[in-house]
Image 1 (cartoon, one colour):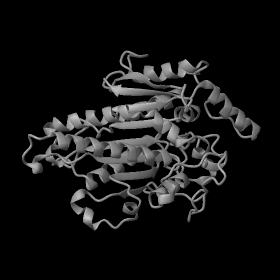
Image 2 (spheres, rainbow, N blue to C red):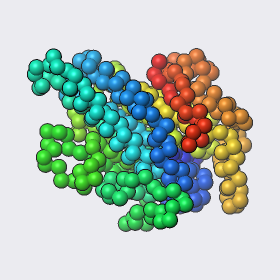
Image 3 (spheres, helix red, strand yellow):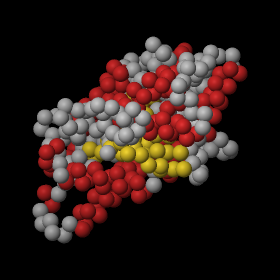
Image 4 (cartoon, rainbow, N blue to C red):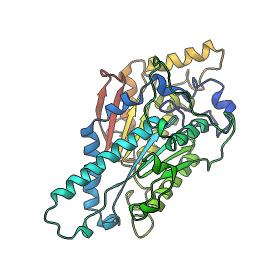
Length: 381
């Protein structure tokens, strides 16, 4: 088995949980940097998700709910599921969860106030339940993400690296190298509205609405990936039951429930370097099968060269696939085109091929703003 891969500053592949392999290269092999958001602002990425985009995604989900009889949702409402792949210490995941939830509450209030023709409030659907899921290969980072949920001071964005007193990393009870099992996920959920008066958890004290969960898992390993997603989907169903058969029905006949949004920030290079062209393609297809929308931030080839240079200077082995990649993005546009060919209808080998979901693609960010990376939005065709 090949080693792990990276994420938003974290990882999502290989290794299992042993700290030695994951931490030997200080994040330069798998991207699991332990101070990532001190140097790459989470708010700059969050700003790329404009209020209008958030509104469009929520309204699209809301429209599906209104036509949701065939999905078994009905009056029980609807979940809006988000997955942040490579969540690192959970800072961006948490801010994204709060942003979407605040906008969902606002839209529900606007709809309720304008529904003057509705004389029976009991017939109105409840607001969407926000359910977010952050996954990273590094269990130490997942511990930090979980600590964020019960510590109000950690909900605020990290201070920039030149701040007078940058926020220290939270103190962990477990040693950095300690392994965690496949069940080492941490979930903090607000109680569904009917039982809100009994909520006494620490999460309520820091006002985390809905359900927010973090798990250490390798998404390039199919069994690990399916286990992580299945566990989260079961947590969603327990907290916000939808459908008489115990499933949300969002995935269609026999399919897994669909996440409204899966984000893949600065992850693709680490999957590519450690698992090759086929590994990256299979990783993207696994996520695409579970997403209505994908936001992908591809790293240009200069980032590949920089990662290899850092390892060479440390006297560490080169990434497993560095010299074997057929899809070398020698120009920035090439990596974007390669990813598009994997997912977009008619791209490359006919997009996904027989039976696979296909997507349209548009540019969310051209890299000219504060966050100097391009973001691509893939939407189910």
